Length: 242
Image 1 (cartoon, rainbow, N blue to C red):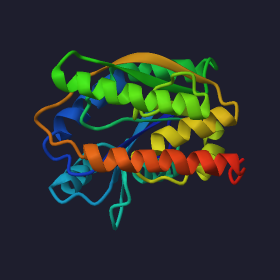
Image 2 (image 1 turned 90 degrees about the vertical axis):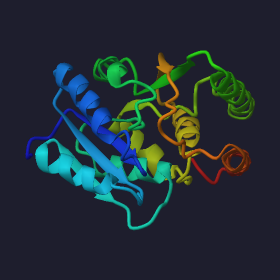
Image 3 (image 1 turned 135 degrees about the vertical axis):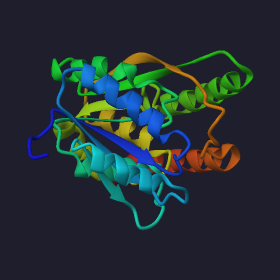
């Protein structure tokens, strides 16, 4: 495909065999109906199942698909960053391929960026009521409170992995991000806000999938997140990052 697309969607992947085909079909259907020219960029972060074979198959079948395979696992944030650098669209987005947040929100988010109403659109997650969702929401509220107090983010869902943005505006932020893990999302919003990037949130429904094992480690990732929060806080205080 030689024509530059209007929109690039980054799909970071790691052991997505069980959800891959159905999710890609759903995503492609939504993007086709959006009447925006698009590409999908798969970035595989060293899957150990059949994900890479499925990616190759999808890219052979569809000219709007491209891929990058990491030689080692560097983390979800690093996978997103690799995809952004590889992308060709003026507008770029990313989401989790398990579609716990549906791709149905993408056209609205793209429209907000195209119309100049936002530089970054964040999907603010609304949780479907369940015991697990209540636990997630409590943890998310705790994280959000810490981030709001330390970085004055005004309650933005900084952890959300569902974003669309104007690439040219975001690239200076990308070059300043140090995290390659789950904290990448939070760091990207904190640094964007410091650079006066216009951030808009829209509500999106988060529906936990129970047919796929989560790659999030509650205790380990929570501790890593807190450590990253303090490292970023002190880095910004000492002006290591503009």
